[in-house]
Image (cartoon, rainbow over all chains, first blue to last red; front, side, top):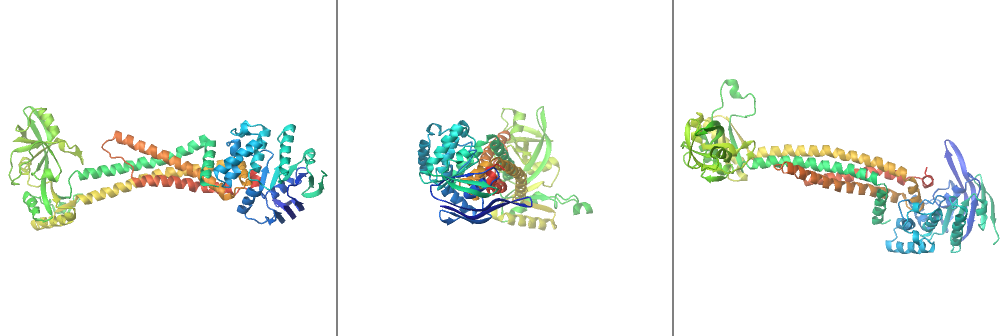
Amino acid sequence: MIELQNVSRTFTVGDQQVAALRDINMQLGEGEYLSIMGPSGSGKSTLLNLLGLLDRASAGTYLLDGGNVTDLSDVQQAHVRSQKIGFVFQSFHLVPRLTAAQNIELPMMLAGIPAEERKQRVAELIASYGLSERADHRPDQLSGGQRQRVAIARATVMSPAVLLADEPTGNLDRTTGWEVLKLLEQLTERGITLVIVTHDAEIGARALRQIHMLDGAIISDEKRAL
Amino acid sequence: MKLADTLYFASGSLRGSPTRTLLMMLAMSIGVAAVVVLTALGEGARRYVINQFSSLGTNLVIVLPGRSETAGIGAGMMTGQTPRDITLDDAEALLRSTAVKRIAPLTIGSATLSLDALNREVVVLGSTASLLEVRHMAMSIGRFLPPGDIHESASVCVLGIKIKQELFGNNQAVGQWVRLGDRRFRVIGIMSSQGESMGFNTDEVVIVPVASAHQLFNTAGLFRVLIEAKNRDVIEQAKREAEEILFQRHNEKDVTVITQDAVLATFDRILTALTMAVGGIAAISLAVAGVLIMNVMLIAVAQRVKEIGLLKALGAPGRQIRNLFFAEAVLLSGIGSLAGLVLGYAGSMIIGQIYPSLPVSPPWWAVLAACGTALGTGILFSVWPARRAARLDPVAALSGR
C-alpha cells in the first residue's frame, strides 16, 4: 500500500542544512491503523506531509498503491491527493464562508464531479456522521466536535485509500476527542489506511501499530496485539 | 473543476468580503462610466457640429472673395490692392458650370428696421430666390423672394419669425410696409423658425433681394456665393469650375472656394481625435482601478493563505487555484463594468436632458473599449496575485506561514 524506501528530507535554514527526516524505511498495508508519536521537532509532521504528497522527499523512494509517486509533477501530485488521500487537521481547516455541506462537497467540486452526484454523496455522509441538523450551518455555528466531524466527512468524501490525521483531537476536549477518534477508527474497518500523528501517548496507544520518532528517525515500530 | 463551479466558488469568496468587493467594483465602474460619459460628450460635440454644418445645406461649395481668407497678410495688402469684389455677374457666370445646380449670392450687413415708432438693428441678408432651397430654409407665411433678374432691386423683404413677433406681435405682417435703412420694403413672407445654426440665427434676419441690399449698403461685392452642386460626386468638379470661371473673369486667383465636405471632414477628424483623447484619459482611471484590483487581490491571497493550502491539500493543482483568482478578477471587473455602463449611460442621459441640443450618446467603440480595458486590466493585474497563490507551498500555507 505505502512503502517508503530510504526517504530523507532536509530543509535549508539560512545556509545550514537541517535534516527533518533521516533514512526512513517503512511499509504500511491496506486498512492498517498507525500512530506516529514523538516530541515536537521529531519530524512526525514532516513525515505526514510527505505521505500526503504535500512535501517532497530530498532522497529516497515513495511507493503508493504500487505506483512510484516520488517524482510526480505538481499537477499529478494534486491528482493523487484528490483521489487517494484524505487529510484531517488539528485546526479543522474548514472554509468559514461555506456551510458544513458545502465544505464536505469541496473536494468533489475541485475534482469536477457533477453536481447531482455530489449532492447525493454529501447527503449520505451528512446522515452517517449525524450532522443532518447542522448541514446548512457555517463552521462558526458548529461545536468543535461537529467541526471535526465535518472535516472527517470532507476527508472521506472522495473515498481515499489513506487518511492522514495531524493531531485530530488536539483542539477538542477529552470526551469529544475520544468520539472523533472512534469515528476515525471505524473507517479502518472499511479498508482505509489511517495514520494519526499525535504527541498524546494515550491516544497513540490505541493504534494497532505505533511508530516513535526522535530527531527525524524512527526509533521504534511496534505492533500491538489485538 | 467545472467552469460553473469555479465561478460559483469565486463569487462565494467575493461575497465573503462584501466591503472590499463593493469598493473594487466601484473603482471599476467609475472608470468605465468616465470613459462612457466623456466619449459620449466628445461624440455629442462631433455630431452637433456636423448637424450644424449639414443644416446649412447639402453639396455646398462656398465662394469667398479674397485669396485665403485666414492669412493675416495677403499679397493684396503688400501691394496696396484689395481683393476684387465678386460681382453679381460673377455669381451668375458660375451657373455656366455643368456641375452647378443652383447658386445663391449672399450679401450681409446690418441696418435699422423700423415700423412706426418701433425700430431695431437687424442683420440684413441680400440674396435671391434660390437661397431658400440652397440653405434648406422654410417659409411660415407668404412667399420668399421672387425669382427673376438678379439685378432687379425689388422693394420686398422676408422677415425672420422673431423679428416679425417683435415688430408686429400677433398682427398680420405680410403686405405691410417697413423701413429698412433709408428704403421702404413690403413684407412678403415670414420665415419659419429654424433656430441657430453656426452662430447665425435665421429667426433674427431680414432677407431682401441682393440688388436691393447692394443699394442699401452701397456696395457691389458679394460676401459669399453659395453653390449647390448637382450631386455629391460633382462637388469637386463644381469647385474646380467655379475657380476657373472666376479666374477667367478676374484674370487672377483672387477668390477662395471651399467645399462644405472639406470643412465637415476637418471638423469630423478634429472632434474624433478629441473624443479619443478624452476617452484615453478616462481609460487611465481604468488602469488605476486595475492597480487597485491587484493590490486588493494580493491582500486577498495573503488573507486566504490557509484556504489556499487547504484547497491544495484537497487536490487542487496550482492551475485551478490560479483560475479561481482569475475568476474573481473577471467577476469583479465584469460586474464593475456593467455597473459602469449603467452609470455612464445614465450620466449621458442626464447630460442630454440638461443640454438637449447636444446629441449625447456614447459611441459603440468607446463602450467596447471601456469594457475591454476593464476586463483586460482586471485580468492582467490579477495574474501576479493569482500566480503567487498558485505557487504557495501547501505545507507552509496550511500552517498560515
